[in-house]
Structures are given as structure tokens and as C-alpha cells.
Length: 333
Image (cartoon, rainbow, N blue to C red; front, side, top):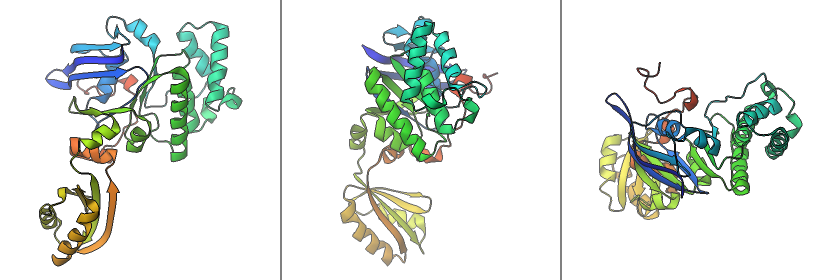
């Protein structure tokens, strides 16, 4: 049985298709990443999976339960950590956890044991009776992950869980997610704008664009689908960039070349062989080579290949899908 399955899932707002037939099958125990530009359909898909939005057509299931017909049962099986910080600043850590545990009808003894166990695991046991208002951003995020797990769900859904956190706090969250995954045999669905995060954590990744899945595989599998094996980055001056790009594309080992932030980003099947040829040819055109870098294909390069733009151009907005993100303003009121 798949932990999460969608079949030709569609969501329309009038003539606008936010989702255009999304089919996914995420096995139990998988750490699954969902990547896509803003407006690609990620938030709509998650709102359907979390029973907050009804699809127009198609089906979505959580561990064999229909997200429309079995909403109450589905909600007991999932834990959700939205993008925006939603913990109440006027409550203590314990109170935050206790309220959520009560929502799920957990008996007093069971919920107390579970709350202290989770707070210990996220490093907040000593701050449990302090107001959330006194917590740092990283501490609040750890509390909200613990809160999402208080009722022992089978599936944890995280929407941009580390946005706005400093690198150290981000890595702490990564370690926590891996710990909980192994301890509770969780299935985790993650949306993120951080390519390193997806590459580090995810077993499989789907790239969604314009409401459709354009690529789905393991990280290594996705990389194998891209013709370029190496990326050469050349920062040059003294020559028209468009003319330089036209010439670069004629070099035999070059598969692609684009201008990104006034640098030439060149895909090649042999970067080490291509660099001296590129430098010599560009010098003959009158170009000054200010910087030359050779790097292996990254997940961001894969994203660019399938969507045509880098994900860092997409500014992640700090809004929660719980509050209606992804719904066009015309229908969102």
C-alpha cells in the first residue's frame, strides 16, 4: 500500500488549473521531496492531501483512505508542519503540545508521557514551561515539529520547514527529521526551496511546474536524465554576452549555455576538457576571463533543466497553506 497516492488529481478555479492531472505514489517510509516554483501547484496539492481543499477531479489517498470521503480518519494519520510559524506566543511549550494532544483525544497519562518524550528529543525539555514568545526561531520550529508528531502520525507533511532559519538551526532540524523518521518509521513529504535540503534528506524528488509533474525519480536518477554531466561557470567581461553564448554553443563538448547573473553557465559532458577550449576561444573574441569554475551537476541544475529557471529566483513567501495560500485572490475571499 502506498502511503500517499494521487491519481490524475485536478484542481481548477474557473478556467485556471492549479493542478492538471497529478499522479504520485509515495511508498511507506519514504522521505519524499516536492520541488517547484511559486504557483506551480505545490500548496494546492498539499492542501488537498491535508483535507483542506477538495479536488475538482481525480483521487487522493492516505494509506488507502480517500482524503474527501474519509477526512476525519485521514487527519488522525497525518502530522502537519506549515510554512508559517503558528505556535501561540502566549502559551508555554507544554501548553502548546497539550492542546494539540487533546485535539486528538489522547488520554492524560499518554499525552503527558508523549509530550515530555518529544520535548526531550527536540532539546526543549528545560524550556518546556517558558512562553513560546521567549523562544528563538529555531526553537519554535523544533516545537512545531514535535507538535505535529504528538499524536504519533504515520505521515508527516512539512511545507518549507526551515525557511528563514539560520544554517545551524536548519541542520538541527534536518537531524531531527532523520531521527524521527527512523524512530517512528515515518513517511515524510517535504516541500522546500533549498536544493541542498532536498538533496541531503530525500529518497525521491518530484518537480512540479504549471500544475503537472515534470520529473520524478531519486536525486541520482534525476541527474542521469540531464544531458550535461558537468557545469562550467565563466564570469567574463569585454565582450557581448549574447555573441559569446552563440559561440560557446558551437563547442563540441558543450550541451547548453545560458546567461545567469552576468555569468555564462555552461553544461558540458566533459567540463575539464571544455574549459581550456572555452577560455582560448573567448580570449580570441576579446573577452577577459574573470573567474572559471567547474562543478558537478547539482539538484538545482536539474531543476533548471526541467523548469527553465533557478529556484533561487523564486522568493518563498511566508504564508501558511492552512490560511489559504495558493488560492487565487478572486476565489480566496
